[in-house]
Length: 140
Image (cartoon, rainbow, N blue to C red; front, side, top):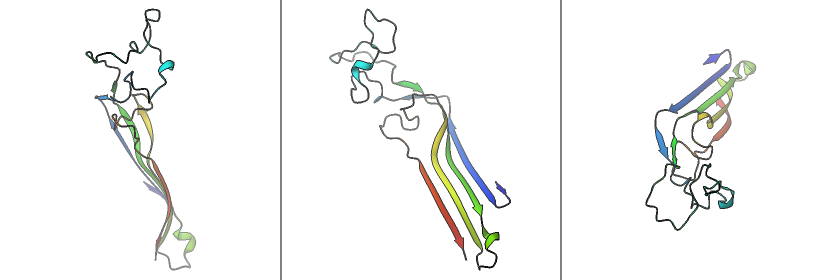
């Protein structure tokens, strides 16, 4: 979009209707992601909770669904805002002088999985990086 000397563009992406498996997220024996004592484990005296019983020696014969999440998301993928300053420098031999700000992957509008799970790469500990750029375009 362009209005007078201001230009603006954006790209929004999303995915809906699928499940993701974040296998490195909620395994109760994965002590590097959480403090074991801080989790609300199931016990005979505490039957209402979110996590099954804590037992690292279990044989893993049964798979749980604790690491399966709804993978729906909407995110701002790219956004750009610029301003053309060429009209202020009409006496100088410049065809274009533009300042701009760009952001890539700045934020999610909506994400149905937990905050520390990336719905685009659920089985990694890495996030998709955000980048912010300010710049000047000069055309002589």
